[in-house]
Length: 101
Image (cartoon, rainbow, N blue to C red; front, side):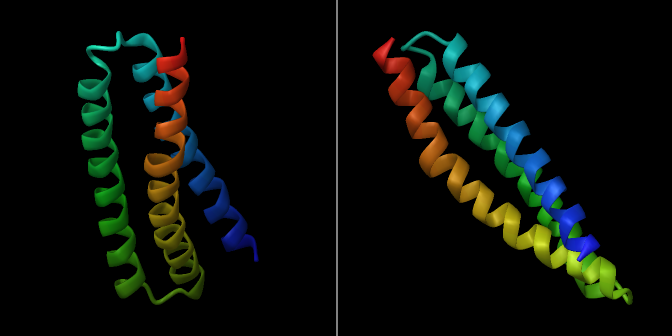
């Protein structure tokens, strides 16, 4: 549906934002600073994802519109999957690439 498409676009935006933040901090850091920069990125990412998921959960519960409920459901699931994907796969690939340089 159109609501699902809008939610997919929002998920892509969140995903790109996290990936750019992590890539910038990892690739610009020295090997000594890398773990501290990753911890800082993780803290920022947890904060943004947790606040967004909290707001979406409230929208899901309080909304009387099926469109808003559909968007909230899509985004909650998508953000949880994206968080796992970003921190398990993308971060490890970036660490490997930075260590190889």
